[in-house]
Image (cartoon, rainbow, N blue to C red; front, side, top):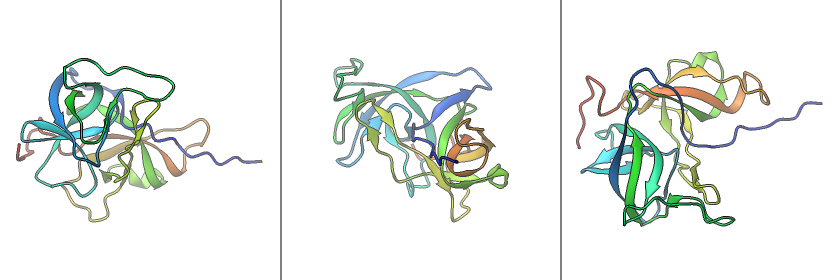
Length: 191
């Protein structure tokens, strides 16, 4: 008997570091429909971190991945179990601690069928940038960049062999690296 298990959405999880990683704190002002949680990819717009989303302004390049969030007083948000994890709610202001290394790779769920043929492809953050409220973890994932547009934020550099799901199939984990990042040579952006 075969049990089909889909990979959970756990946002972007750092996996390999090719240079010195660095975390920096950036102010955040969220719109009424965008929460921000650990594991979310962010871009920089007018000096503030904004969630990276599908179809975002192509003039914005990636900034990094959120590894912590602070409230409007600069204090770390903590767990309030069993109902709430540490994340900024929609419409909130605060700060995000962001891993800004352009050479870091991340493990993230790929929405769709993933085989060896997707390695090297550009991918975009899915529109489903919601939060698991009990854990404060982003549900961001990536999907094929249908337009083959070079403004896509990420590039697939490998596949993860999930012990439960195996090495092929739909909705599995892939390893991605920044394609467009503000600290990468050759990337021109509006900040």
